Image 1: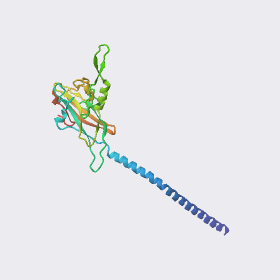
Image 2: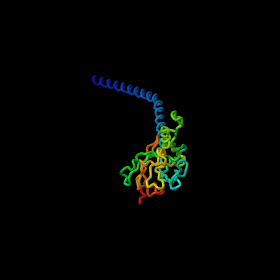
Image 3: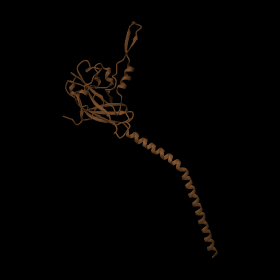
Image 4: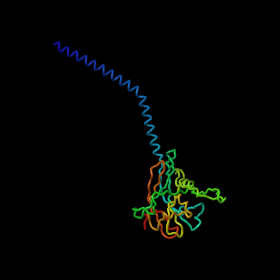
Length: 268
């Protein structure tokens, strides 16, 4: 019986050691978790705050919507502060852009679309081939200042006369700022000119800040003949993903009335 008694005694001692080890491990684990709890709380707080900020900024991101003006009163624009360009009457085909405001339950306004740009590409009526070398041209916002062909006076030592020289660098600067605009959510809609058509000209022409380098605002290198076209409009800004819209650009007849931008489905 001695071996059996010895076995039981050894087994009892092993169980006792195991229980003591388990108790000590549990106590140590409890102390470790207690010590770690404040740290985990801090980390959890940072994670919750970070997620909340991300969601909050996501809600406030710019929400751009493009629409067509309903009246000709908007489509006719003053150029260089005059109702026409000083020759025959001209018409600007435009689109409207708005940064939709947040619901009233949000007490903060939506973020503005910073340095928003309107880029247009013109395709044929079947939306297959680019027309008039018009790919990704930046158009001019109505609310932006009109670029001016600034001329700087310089004294000519040879003739003794003061001559005016075109300041190309200043013009490029003004063009760049004419083609960008911050779109605020609580402001009125903004309008951007897409193309210009002058009475007596069967063609129309894309319109942007660069157009002001031509005396009659018509870039012959980008002439758009009569016909129907598919207009791709991309609105982009520094703090939002670009959005693309498609419209129908129509150019018919020799008068400015023949130029319009219409919904793509409005075909005759």
